Length: 109
Length: 115
Image (cartoon, rainbow over all chains, first blue to last red):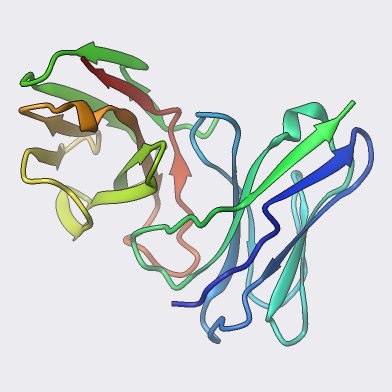
């Protein structure tokens, strides 16, 4: 399984863009990069996923490097409600999702 | 709101008892997954059902069982409860059986407290 590395924690000012990096240097060709977040004790929330092209939806943008060894999740205008733990992981379609330690994002007023 | 519903939200019971957790998947989703999240162990996959059939099994104890009914809702049964079973139990659903783009959507969870 591809391993991921994420910063333990990050701060971001409200209204500013939050850029969350993820290193997945051992990702294989058929693995999509998925991002989820979990707000304290709530169910994990799907954010976005991508294979090699950059993706954007109503929640965030996902930038994947050309070599696919890393990606960045961008929340364009962070709000206090974006304070959460953010998880990135490759997904081969295995049934079990495996969440690592993630990045704890604290949005400051 | 993911569209996945779970009941009850909270459950408090005693050791040795049996409880049933219920999950209704998003409309159109055929797969249901169960996960356990405790403070010291993160999110642990328990079991997956796809269109009524067991599809994949994770670290599910023998005291735990699950099923998916013809209307696609699922129930997780936990018996002979122990203090260590206290945790958040999440259900997730997806359209298919588990392809690379088969996104799982999680419900709000059931918080089980065993006293």
